[in-house]
Picture 1 (cartoon, rainbow, N blue to C red):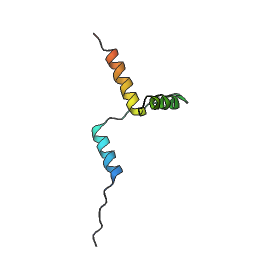
Picture 2 (spheres, rainbow, N blue to C red):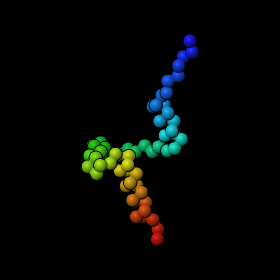
Picture 3 (cartoon, rainbow, N blue to C red):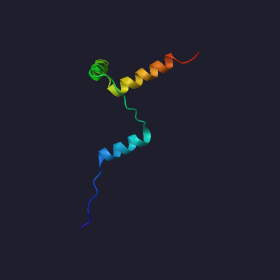
Picture 4 (tube, rainbow, N blue to C red):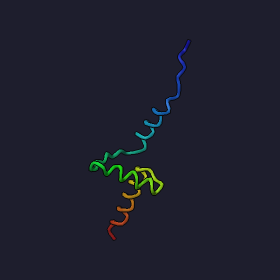
Length: 65
């Protein structure tokens, strides 16, 4: 009997992320991660979306005129 291949959702997502996104590791002082998580949650955002928004806003603000 042929072994039935099951769809591996996690593997599929990881492969898609590897193709579509770059990864940046961020190191913060102890305790700051919880502050960032709480702040983002208070704004209705994930930590990832908050950090992306903060980076985009800072880059737009600091753009040479």
